[in-house]
Each structure stands twice: as structure tokens, then as C-alpha cells.
Length: 55
Image (cartoon, rainbow, N blue to C red; front, side, top):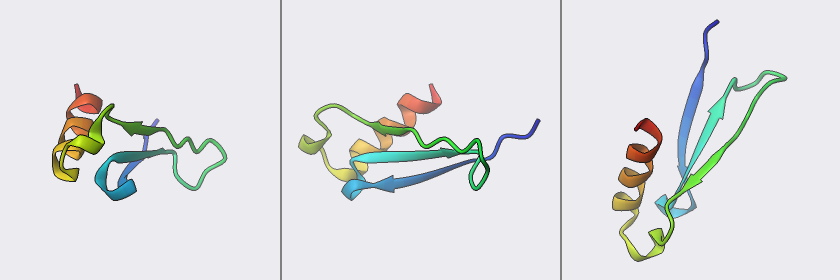
């Protein structure tokens, strides 16, 4: 089974949208955000999110 996943940075860089099985009946859209990310720059928040997801 092949899994297609798409990522998109949203909310001014403070959140990451993950789309699994896009454009199918089983599509899932989890949203990830780092707590207290508003205190960081958008770039730092985005990097923290990626590290958290890929860990």
C-alpha cells in the first residue's frame, strides 16, 4: 500500500497541516502546533513542528 502525505504550513507559520490519503474517501487532516509557538518566530515554530513529527 502506498501512502501519500502532504504538508502545508498555516496560521502564519505556527501550525502544520498534514494531509494523508488526499482526495480519497479515507482522507485525514491532522493539525500540529507547538505550544507557546506565538513567542517564537514562525520559522522556529515550523522547524520545531517538523522535528516533532519526524522524530
